[in-house]
Image (cartoon, rainbow, N blue to C red; front, side, top):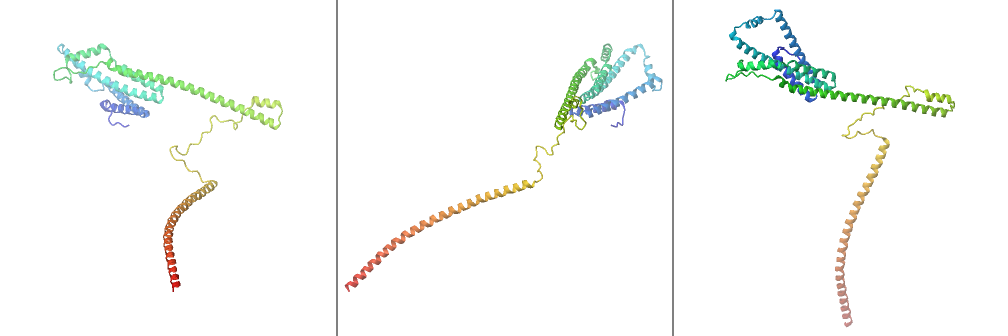
Length: 364
């Protein structure tokens, strides 16, 4: 990150608040490496400002600074009548400087606290403890004596001087009770210390548990390999007819397997699956035998369906033909019944006419 302006006001009012917010956001999102990076950038910039300010103060002490020091020394030589006014203004400036230093200390403490928390969550417990110690030191340095704070607050309120005076003439100096103001930050730091102690304790337990597990695994694998190799060698010797008891005793007692015969510590890892369980399986390459069986199955199923369809068709044809035949038979029977009556009448009529003709012939 490149910063074009390195003035203390810019760092105090813009740079540190922005990086503090970024560190808080990344910490809540679980991006702990980003949090550590933002905190380190903020600490580097504050160190640069401190080095620059220390160099300027040394120059002023050596006489290379601005001539403002002489003016400040001359201001001390005032009359007895103006002592109260000078005391009030100095108390007000001291309170303002104290407030500014307190804000800087709190901002630096917040950054170190976030860095320590991110380091704890990433497993760097030693660095996290160092960052917590530095954050607590930032608050401890800014604690001043109660007598001095009480003196500053009483003198500033009594004078009512300063640029923050309100319309009624009462001085709004924003005097802060430092011990009560720093109490929540100290509680948060001590709570983080407890979390760090718990994490270190759990880490030691896990380390011991893993160590015991590895020892048991290694010891069990070595014993199983030696027992299996000795039993296999004894069986081979018996099968091949090696009946010398001395050789068998030597093999069973002091046999060491070769590297090729040693079994690995961990079994071969299975091949990663080529598809997800949520998707359909991939088709295997076609097998000719399987294709023939599938073809036979398809042919039988087709013939079976053909038989079923043909039977259904012919049964339908038979039902239709039967219905038609019944209809025709009924019509024929009705027709036959009507024709029989007429024929019988006709025969009767013909017989009667024949009798009449014969009767006429006889009479003639």
